[in-house]
Length: 367
Ligand SMILES: [Zn+2]
Ligand SMILES: [Zn+2]
Image (cartoon, rainbow, N blue to C red; front, side, top):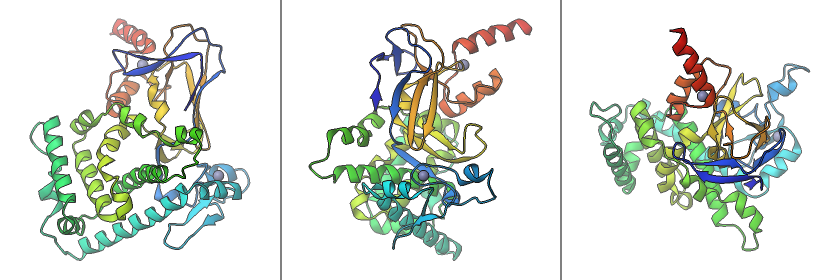
């Protein structure tokens, strides 16, 4: 993460840490760059259509030329999932550094494991631990932190016994969306593994971009609010945890204890990977850690743009000294009610930005 000398980090009473302008800043100034997502997933169904390196969407690029929707440059290694690229250069970048190929290998293992668990579930083979008896999906009790902690303690207990875990997983029938979550968590695990096994002559500047784990764990967890609003999320996360403990090879399995912490932060901190500015299709999602340092405003003063894997934050209007730097998490062309609902549902807060406050006053006058 490369920050600008014009901005400063401060802790706020309402939204954790946030960036503020140290002096007036003109529009069009790039204040922060985040090289790559810490975790990401391109939906399985889009693999041929989205470049694995720069996330370019073939249908958008070819729209004006012909009807082609898929890329033709492909990496297919034995034991690894096939991956597609927009150019040879993207393939070369992806292959260097070791993260891409290892992730493709792990994704192949996960896909195979999902098929195996599905087949057994279809054949009616039942283990002695039926998923629903271990993790209640929608409890009628009120969900407290204690309840969630207890469920995770059971999940860890299950993972500590290989026979019990295999039995549980052999009938779990992992949903497609759960597989996408597992793939996104695996992308973070692979990054961590490659980081821990980097050569000793690794340059410090690379470490700064590769080691965002501490920063991720620093992010605010939205576990309790998320599970209270959507109780089914807890079961999905526990199933993903069990599935990863069961499927990943031993050298990566040691990172699985971090899964809960990641998933607890994923919801409020991930951004959709879209086909373009008009946001017609969501191709997957990613967590860009530094994006999470910016609070939301419905009249933001920063614009967030993605070029390839890199996220850039640029001022979109003149900013005064001391002003908080904000991006928008949602489509700000929506009505106040729509914006509020989306922010409350996905980010668990009620927006009190200047625009919402003035529109709220207007609304109060009208009624
Ligand atoms: Zn590309
Ligand atoms: Zn607002």
